[in-house]
Length: 489
Ligand code: ZN
Image (cartoon, rainbow, N blue to C red):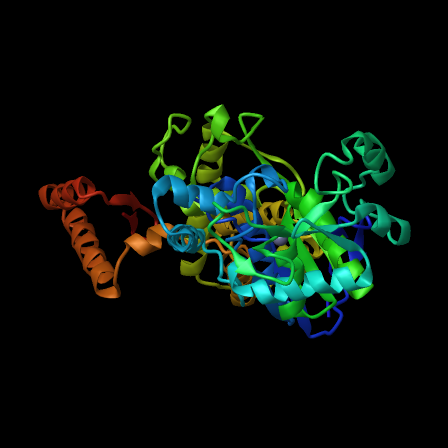
């Protein structure tokens, strides 16, 4: 098995990935809170961990990928007070909360499909796992790391920190946090303001509520991932991923909950993708730079110069390493679009090439596979993989232009590796191929263009121009090449 290194946010270094129960791998990624349209902030973790999911399977692992849907307990400002994000949307739109959830889950799935993000193995809803969350909370209470107050249950950070270290993932200094929050004591039902809710008693107007031993209420936001992660992947599992913005408090609290209830960390490797900024600024509704994925796909936003296809967005995200920040701008997207077009055009040419002559003994073609593999094994370095594919493009174009030749063996290898990395692992597909329609349709266009070629040969310019002009008017782009023609819609 190839050696893959993953940067573990917890240890802050790259570690060799050794699954707990090879060939089985457990992967958990925090999914969306479904109260609004999917945007770029949703696309990045989905695409990052989709590539990881694909690559681990390519390495031969059997991956159980769990990506949850948060549909209860995520309160405004990620805090312990305030309205539930979904309940608030339901109130404003006069809908049943589960109507809001279904509506945005559907929109999320549609966007993910467009981005060629594979569905996870399990997509559990927090609202469907209330019993598990109550049981997990009870375990923490039984272990003595939580307390009940006015029908709610809070995690006792100070007590926990004496036995374990709270803040080890995010690097926060809990002593300082306890010190600065001491003056708030006695003003709230919490002992310390750093304590977080495991269960909240519902106020009379709160509509999403369930019966628990402590009160009629709802689970705290962090509880769902501890409960569902361990339910589906076991008390200890391999990888937990998510956006860097979830590191604190969400993932820090998950670690605390697991250690308190189970006496151990549930997660071996913590992986966090970095954030996306727009024009150097954090994306936010109040800043006017909030762009949904649908707006990208249609170009319907004042900050966008034009529409950008889902594959352009995917390619743009993969052109940066997942731990780097990415700054979105129309110009940067246009550059990605051009690069992607070149890559896909090269791939289409490659598939049509024919090998000839003897095989070169030290052909650079045979380095492509090991180079791409080395990049992926180095903490999923997709920008380096893309750079290697661009390098291979030079060979393809030289052969295409008749300036070099390639043996059948080299060609077969090149086709296989290019297809494997571009299509299967990076998940890039030729969107124009979707517009090319059925085989019969494609053959009909080829037929027309062959008639045009014959007309040209016979110097029948009227026929040749007519076919070209009328196809162009219908939206076809026709390119004359050495072999004949290339076309796309
Ligand atoms: Zn989570």
